[in-house]
Amino acid sequence: MQKFYSKYGRIFDLLPELILILDDGKKIVDHNAAASVKLGLSAEELHGREIDSIVAESGRKAIASLLQSSDQGRHLESQFVTATGEAIDVDLDIKVLEGTDRQYQVLIAKDITGQKKRDLDYLRFSNVIEHTINPIQITDANGLMVYVNPAFEHASGFSKEELIGKNPRILSSGRHSRDFWGKVWRYILGGKVWVGQVENRRKDGSPLHTELLISPIVGDQGKVIGFLGAHRDITEQKMLEQQLVRSQKMESIGTLAAGIAHEVGNPLTSISSLVQVIQRTTNDEPAKEKLELIKNQINRIARIIRDLVDFSRPSTNVERPTDVNRVVRDALNIVQYGKKVKGISFEVELNESLPPLMLVADQLTQVFINILINAVDSFEGKSGTIQVVSGLNDGSVEIRVIDSGKGISKDDRDKIFEPFFTTKEVGEGTGLGLWVSYGIVRNFRGDILVESNPGKGSTFTVVFPVKG
Image (cartoon, rainbow, N blue to C red; front, side):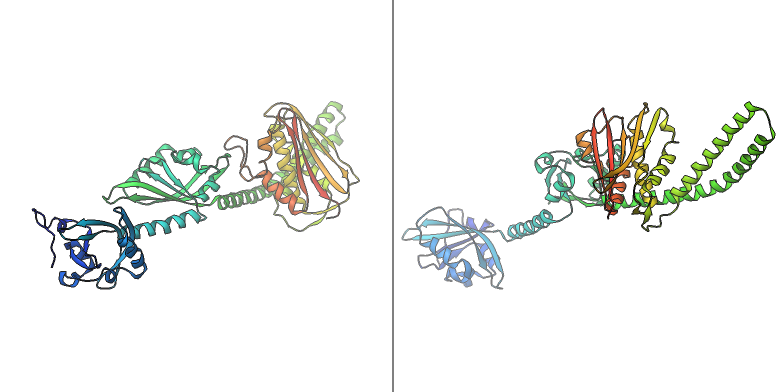
């Protein structure tokens, strides 16, 4: 058996790579210890064996071709087959060794089976997160984003280039305190998985509610080297929850209004009766004038309570022939008694020849209340005028609400019918009013048109076809 020694002995037995020495007949004449261990073959079983017998069939042709080549820099990836039939992925270099009487081919093979498996796992993992519908982000140990998938770009509105290298706080809505994120950070640094709900902001400023799972990425030494954040978009769910809460609040208002109507209505009726009795029994003209004022105010209170009860009553959801002008008046009766209307005058021009439309009256009342409240808010406490005009135009009924308030910018005008979009301060508006109104009007085959110039006021036009 040919053995290759140096003055230090068989040094290549100490190397972890598989080393095989072939004669010019492609037979193994020597090998190191690692080759015997990895292939599961003894020295006697390896000696004299054809190289093809330990190379996977798919790689034999490529290795044979390289063995015939005289190039020194011969390299390829291939597979060896062990005594048990298991395939080993190898990174193979072929060198020429000059002997005393002949040339030998030296195969130096690095076992990359584990690396190939990791590469395959990584490929599968990357394909999964690249194409999942859930937004995924990966950060380094310092919390800076190193990867985001397309779903994250779509959900956030930011491009990959705008996010990579940035801290996730670029999406912060400010809703969660520094102490909240401090606790999350300490928790995940301890190697634990954190799950919770967070509110972020998209690039356009709209809210992004997600259920977030943050999982530490642990390296070979057991040290946290990064974090994976998997989001589930629950914005629509949150929107529906808020709508439900709003619906429940309206139901509570209806119950409260009914109680007020009963508890206040009876005393008001008695007071009104007494006022009328005194009016008939006194000849004091100044007193009669004051009593008339009292009676008018009593009637006003009774009307407000009646309108509130009517508006708060659960919707029948049944379309009936509806007088649109009456619906507009009901909405005006509710809005114009608000505390914000001081200094605002209402000019009402309603075409009394409008045909009845198949609508749900109380839902349409909600539409005009929302539009009128927004018109009132546009004055920001200043005086001004709101015009309400109804009429017929080319086979459609149009109701226009024209205010001389602050107006709406073009960017905001494109988003006012989106859910949760509002220009009001936190706590002053939910951003649902116009969105709900638009949905109601579209459900009745109508449309809402908006014209506005900053500083010059706005015009909201509600349009319904006469023949739906």
